[in-house]
Length: 111
Length: 116
Image (cartoon, rainbow over all chains, first blue to last red; front, side, top):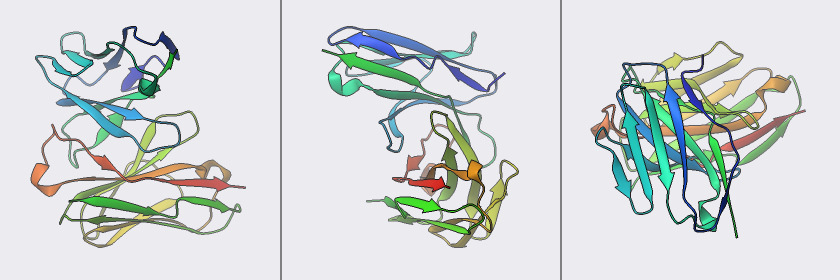
């Protein structure tokens, strides 16, 4: 079983619609969680951290469910510019503050 | 402000040739540094990380090596490249002052390596 699993997609989303997807992680000792965004042939960039109580940043909402070991990302009012691959990232708090990346969920927003 | 540089941006090398990729960070001191590889259509795989000069931890067995000759310089090398070494190589750093599990890493622009 992969440490961090994501549905690869693609999620084809009409412009203005809402899309949500999850990520599951296997290490129950994981301490911190992030969503990164990666555009085609570019480096990943932090979209948002995920806090235990859930958090929102504009049109983006992230949730953490420690009991079921998953995190989610919801995008409201999708824009064409939201088309990207969204990477779920987990830090188990081990030496070196290493991150474990999911394979990414591809989102395509269409007019 | 802090910035991270990688070069070259793209590289095409024959099988069996050597490799040297460089990553430098500006505007910080004593960062954690990381090398990742992303194969085509795949997720990021951590290759090496370093918590200080001369300190290298290897995450996966392979024909690559890493070195940290200076505080803000991280080098990825190979003596003989394999076809399977093709991929997108990303360097990342974690600020010293934020060495807590809830802080993110910042990525360089990456080097796209094609081994033929």
